[in-house]
Amino acid sequence: MILMTGTLKNQTVVVLGGSDGIGAAVAELAKVEGAHVVAFSRSGGAPDGIEGKAVDVTDRVALAAALQTVGAVDHLVYTVGSRMGSAPLKSLGDEVLQHTFETKLFGAVRAVRTALPYLGPAASITFTSGQVSRKYGVGTLVKGTVNAAVDAAGRHLAKELAPRRVNVISPGVVDTSLWGEIGSETRAATIARVSASLPVRRIGAPRELAQAYLFVMTNGFVTGALIDVDGGGLL
Ligand SMILES: NC(=O)c1ccc[n+]([C@@H]2O[C@H](COP(=O)([O-])OP(=O)(O)OC[C@H]3O[C@@H](n4cnc5c(N)ncnc54)[C@H](OP(=O)(O)O)[C@@H]3O)[C@@H](O)[C@H]2O)c1
Image 1 (spheres, rainbow, N blue to C red):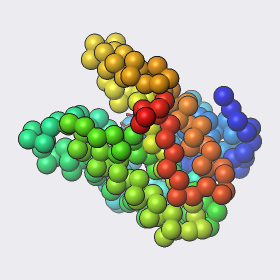
Image 2 (cartoon, protein in one colour):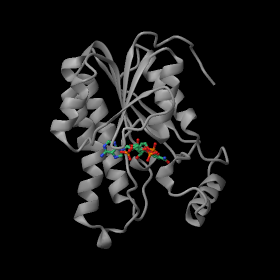
Image 3 (cartoon, rainbow, N blue to C red):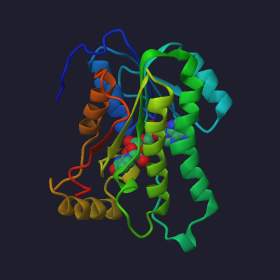
Image 4 (cartoon, rainbow, N blue to C red):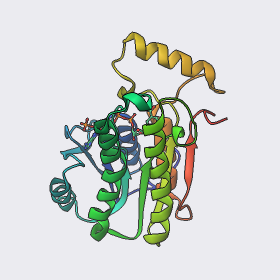
């Protein structure tokens, strides 16, 4: 569903993590809305018709050089993420902790700090957390804490960077490659189990998430918001 054709006409949208999954869907929808979209990822891939550029968000120097190639940015979207696993504390390695925080939180903060000279007063910034920030369980320490930190970072920055707007989208379970290979038994079993547990009886589609990103990007009165798009997963 497309809500507002042309809303982003002539605006520049940068999606970090835009080669796949939720970020790719945001890139596609922003393009439909008239934006000039640049999708960044390690692979440099992008949906058809969208400019893709390669950068690893953990590389500060490369990130600065990459953002400089774009110049002024109207909307910065951060959807970088990687599989985090669900290890219990006793088998949770430091490297998993570090990698998760490095890509999901530090990368997001670094991207905003690096992009600041290019983000005017009317710009928006959108982070991505996840429902597990407020859904507690065994083996969810890393996912839970990193997503809670992203939630908090969004709100702090909404105050600090005003009048720029900063919001956070919190997905529930969404059908992306983050859940492993299509066709794998584990993936299918996980999706079936989660679907049965949700009030909407299915997991989400990237496009449904993209609509929420477009909403916060285009509504100038929304800042400091944390929006759950999770099929009722927190109920
Ligand atoms: N899918 C879900 O069920 C779900 C649920 C809750 C929260 N989330 C969150 O939503 C966000 C997006 O998830 P997704 O499902 O769309 O994942 P995805 O399909 O795996 O996409 C992740 C994107 O991040 C890029 N990326 C990964 N590491 C990077 C790095 N170091 N530097 C630059 N780009 C990097 C990937 O491209 P390259 O591999 O080419 O770099 C890809 O474009 C993540 O923060 C995730 O934690 C997802």
